[in-house]
Length: 143
Image 1 (tube, one colour):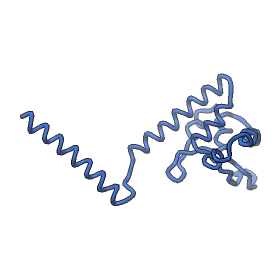
Image 2 (spheres, rainbow, N blue to C red):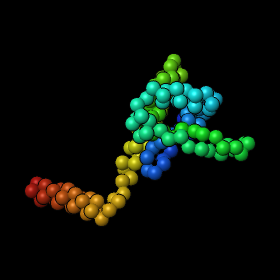
Image 3 (spheres, helix red, strand yellow):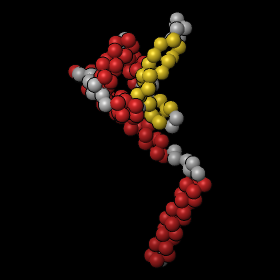
Image 4 (spheres, rainbow, N blue to C red):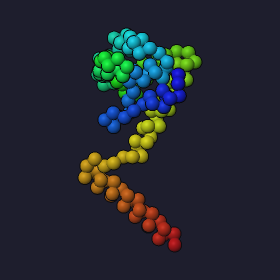
């Protein structure tokens, strides 16, 4: 398991933290075809609604030979479903590192919330005014 691979394991896709089977194989120092085989076997035993929500098979262009292959993109829940099947000391260390990486990205997203609509902006402004007003009242009351 390489530090560089772990650092690049989680990325944003449509504002959602994601990873994929290529990154999983790289981080765990496994061949991608073996990781794909393992994922496919696990998904055969997984309820369809969970697969639909958390996994997507997508093509990618191999940088060395220019051929198109398949990979699985997956959400945190999808990844955890797969990662929990890895065993041993290496598997345990890997799962903990990944949980920390996903949490770090989610925390940074929470701090960067940008209102998507005028209504969201108005609610945020109203909340800030209420908090500031409360602060002014407490300061005035205590003086």
